[in-house]
Every structure is written in C-alpha cells, then in structure tokens.
Amino acid sequence: MVIGFGTITFRLDQCHGLKEKRKIIKSIISRSKNGFNAAIAEVDFNDMHQRAKIGFALVGNDRRMVNSQIDKLHEFIYRTALAEIIETETEILNI
Image (cartoon, rainbow, N blue to C red; front, top):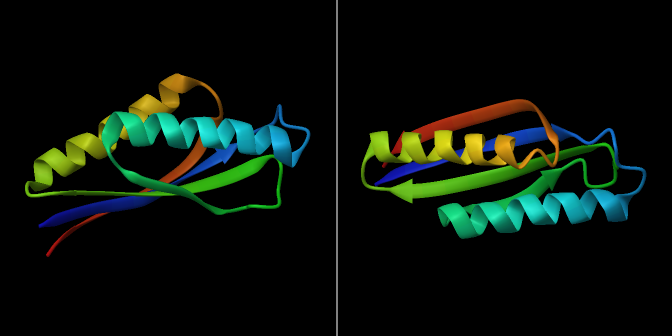
C-alpha cells in the first residue's frame, strides 16, 4: 500500500473576511474531492482571512500512480485560480 499526503498553503489577498475565505476554500476542497477521490480538509490558519492551508491524502497500490495523482491534484488546484498557492509539501510512504 502506498500513501501520498501533504499540505498546500494559499494566500487569499482578495478576501476581506472569514466568510469569503471559507467559501473559496470549501469550493477548492469539494472540487478536489470529487475529481480525485482524495481526503482533503482545511488544517491551519483557520482564523486568518488571507491565508489557508489544506491537507490531503491519497492511497493506492503503485507509487508512480500516487505521485502522478498528487501532481495532477496540485495542477488542478492551481488551474482553478481561486487562490494563490505559496507553498506545497508532499510525502509518499510505502507501507
């Protein structure tokens, strides 16, 4: 079994309140969950309206496939253009 997981940190300069931020992050999370069958949640900067961090996890049986899915997930989120990605961290474990 192969587990790929990581975080993506966003800058949301256009947000002026937590409601607006949560709407954007919810949209990113729901679109990503539907497109990649990944576990995704907001994990940090919950009370800051111009920053957000989501965590994600993918499971598979082939390291290359999991790595490819992570790359596609990053690209998908980048292409939504809802928020600026400022940092990504990823790790892949064989269990």
